[in-house]
Image (spheres, rainbow, N blue to C red):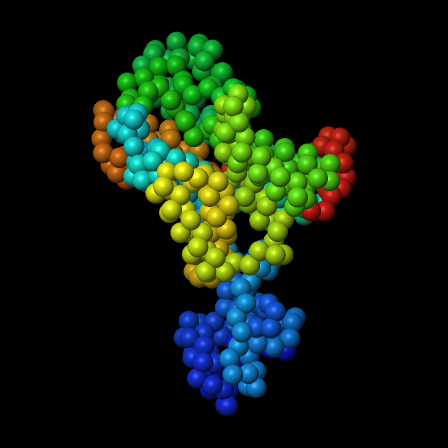
Length: 427
């Protein structure tokens, strides 16, 4: 049995390779970190800080061996750890959406951002960042379905994650932003049915409405108030889909694989693909995370495979074909590899999960900046001026609304517990 990484000064008889490994570990402050084990060897990926002894035998670093064998961790082992970079990656994706939106909001429709031009119109930065959100969501939502003590607990946690923050943002938009920026008299603004229809439709995610009466009508990207909300109805749809499939006992590897394959093929089926809208493409991304979770015992996070996946993404973007399925498969693997790389980025989680707030407040703040500047600007000007206000609003949303709401996720309403099954089937 072993605690942490042994001191290189106390390991006589070891070869140069072993000593070099130990010196690197001690130099980077890993001496007090518990090792995880896979197969016959120690791997330096996915380390967990703990004061407990390893529960598995220390078979990798023995004086009798000339060199320890390194085995990449499985996704399950990384998910069982307490440290990851998921919060940081989601925040990066949310900021990426703001950068992407700054092109049409500041410069007008038809402005192509660099990624869209490089991929020959296959994918914009904003859609890539939405894919990042959905891949991570597919992984974590499937795990939530498995771990929840009941369907009521699962669905209640999903409600608390989406709707409290959304409701407050909509109230701020309708009763603060709208009156301040509308071209109409305040009486006409508050008498208009569209004012309250905006609040109701976007809160229920039923036929979302993009404009408020007289608001941002002179902007470059008029008159949308919050164009980011379109993805939320799909996100909630995936939550319900996972619940239904899990309830039926069909959340299995083969069904998930078949579903992912259909999502890749259906867009090319005449008369069918166009009628499905965004569902096939977004299913590729959410399904990519879901499939990886179901295969978590078999998927090993190897740097070489991650490098190969990055090569596939660059190649499909440059060739102008196949990028979306590649993002849902190779991109999902690469994202998981980055999510569980050890390092200080994992410490970012202690500040809070601001990504949702950045996502839902970004668009209206960017439109506000455009309106105050009086017209077209460079995309980077819009981004630079918007981010500080968006950051402040997202921090307030997390600490005052989202985090307090999530504290009630383990106490679903009695109505849900009576209507829904008591148990969730194992994944």
